[in-house]
Length: 477
Ligand SMILES: Nc1ncnc2c1ncn2[C@@H]1O[C@H](COP(=O)(O)OP(=O)(O)OP(=O)(O)O)[C@@H](O)[C@H]1O
Ligand SMILES: [Mg+2]
Image 1 (cartoon, rainbow, N blue to C red):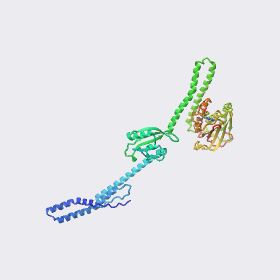
Image 2: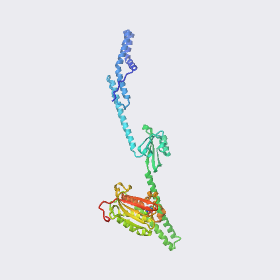
Image 3: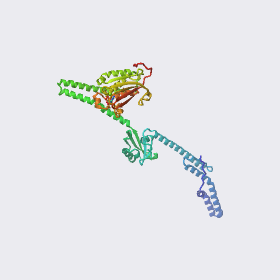
Image 4: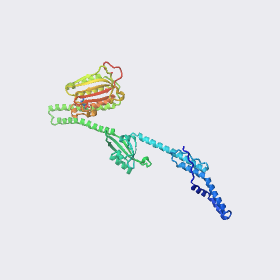
């Protein structure tokens, strides 16, 4: 604690005070001189003595008061010794009042600083990007989320150079000029385009630090916008897929009721087409229902054990006729010793039914489709962490035309087809791989697609093995 130097009392001020305090005594001396009771020389000597003595007496008291004033005026950051008034009760009161005031002010400043720090920490913790703008449209504060989104040095830069969106700038102007609150949506371009909802809020509290006048808050709504887009696309796609066969069926009904009423040949031909179209609609609805059922259960993984050998053999047998028609030879390459997998046999049948049917459908005439199974020490990154160590993988490899790279990431989207006309012609709904993906997700596995244009594709399904001893031949348990 810094020892406070004793305040020096300016002579002029001391003299003024002594004159003031000695004034009544001096007035009495003048009166005595005027009445002739006192000689002028004695009166002057007495008056000077009174003034000097008064000055000497009040000097330490004035020094105490000045000490208290200096103590009060000192910066709160300075560590000061409280003043000690020794010569007068009143000066002591003033000194103790000064000590009390300074200590209370110190406590208040400490509390305000702690509050400001906690507000700053709170701003920093907020996950959404946030900017505080002053009257000159300068960013006076930002949180780490804003810095991550908009680039390192955001603070102390003009808003226009940080967020170059004319809508946002206009909204900030409106907040500054008219105190107007705005909500708007913007798109921030970059390697990945992102959608944001921006809230622009005027700050009416004039006591805000840093001169902040407007709060700009950004909420990332990219996922929401995409989901909404997907929902709209899904409804449009599903209606379109249903409308095409439905229109065809209605057209044939019209023809059968009208021009072809008595044409038996046309009846047979048209009914066959109507049957085919109605079957297509039925398949589409079944696939959609199947997809929504799987989605509903996706968060509860299966707990049973499934025998891959049995499933793959049954699926291959079921596709025998389709394969023969195409001259495709299905080869099963399954090791004798293989653990069962954790899975739902019906759902896994659906997975391999889809993949093997695709391999035959999109494979070239007179080629082979090879289905091989192996156990690997580590699943791919797409597999959940908990099931990644140790996996059983089924590869379905075809000798088709392959799929160009740009299609691969979108292949498992509903209704996505590389060649829509060809898929429809082959009776496809474009939902097969979407169903596969959701079933594999539910099994906490992974689906990878490897394809070379002109050579063929390999779809690999990774699944977690079931605990327990290896069986010579796999059985459903
Ligand atoms: N083995 C493959 N080789 C080449 N392209 C494929 C292969 N498997 C799938 N595709 C492409 O991926 C698209 C989506 O496949 P998906 O199984 O989801 O639908 P689909 O086969 O058209 O219809 P569905 O399976 O409902 O009958 C197909 O339309 C096709 O373009
Ligand atoms: Mg398919």
